Figure 1 (spheres, helix red, strand yellow):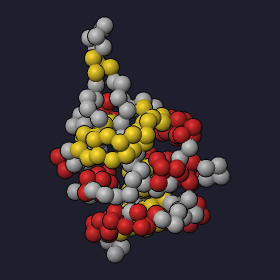
Figure 2 (cartoon, helix red, strand yellow):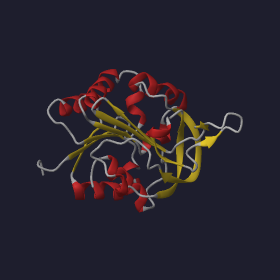
Figure 3 (cartoon, rainbow, N blue to C red):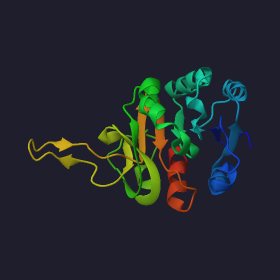
Length: 218
């Protein structure tokens, strides 16, 4: 299966119930490409030194822990060289919100901070800025899940958010971006970083489709 595009799962704090919770996602990825997972920094570094995956999914909060700086640096370099990195699955569920408040600004100079944990129907923002290889019409229009939203994302970084994406300040009549977002994404040089705040086990096809599209599958 080496000719299939690889989706690399970086799972430095893998939990025993993870595979059961997301088996439908694994099946969908396997139908489009090759899923490879590493649970140690040593194994992950060795693998990424020899393979350029189509996307890296950071599936838990392990990358934010002290002692994993070398792994974090490798992920940053992968993005700068044109790679896609998606923070999803157990990452929003278990990441320390205090760490999340500074993680994206320190790592990628992105102003994303921890928001509210809430269940909402979120809608695709057709004005979001995605890599040119992405086809916006292929994303689901909306879906409903419980998510750890993020604050601070610029309007064009919001991929899925509750409507409206913008409100108007009655005093200045200017658009004010005051909405949190469940899914955000940003271009970093030639690469792309995304955060998916969903914390529930997969129950609908919208989430599966979202992850596949962020991985670059049409």
